[in-house]
Amino acid sequence: MKNLSLILNIVLAVAVVILYVLHFSSKPAQGTGGSYDGAPASLFTADGLTIAYINSDSLLQNYQFFKDMEKKMEERQQKLNREYQNRAQGLQNEIENFQRTANNMTMTQARAVEEDLRRKQQNLMVYQESLAQELMQEENKINTELYDKVSDFLKDYGKNKGLQLVLTYQKGSGVLYANDSMNITQDVISGLNQAYQVEKTGGSVTAKPDTAR
Image (tube, rainbow, N blue to C red; front, side):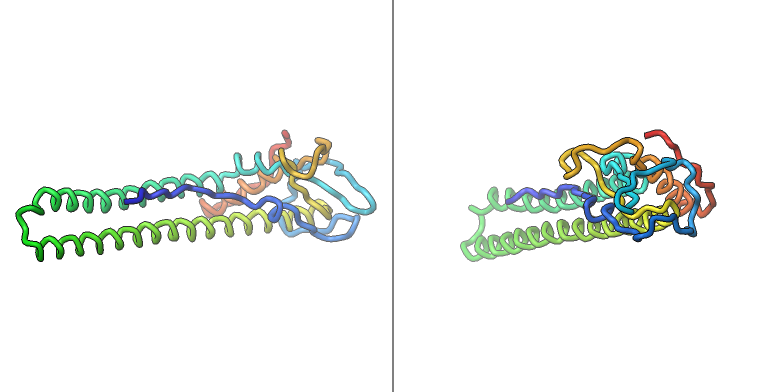
């Protein structure tokens, strides 16, 4: 029998989520969200484009929603693994019992048991595939929700700060260097976490993000 391998793999497609053209005006637009006063006072402007960047690794490490969902998926994976292992062990016990008692059976009885065990083994494989599919669907749902939360926040944040382009900057990305004055990572993390806290508690939080980068 094959062992079940259900691997948690929650990956944010940062290049799609954060590389977002907000609008093409060199003047800040009036936003409907918080003021996010901790943002850098001046951002890089080139040919009419106001540009900032976010360190995606830091975002995932510090965004509480992502950490909560990651923990939730790990717990879900462990639960499904236990369920599978219990079923697999039950079948293994039946196989071992058949091996011990097969000599006391008639040929017809032995064939009937063998057929039943093959059917149960096939059902177990189908169950394994269904668990993997279930985890994948839950993972995709979380990724979609993560995309929406970051994207919606950046739309409002970008309009409020007059940004036309927000890039992702991390090891292995296409950006080799970016000045720290363009870094809005902590401001965005703070704003996302404040919004998530409000969502969880149903309360209200004044947006006063951490300016440290």
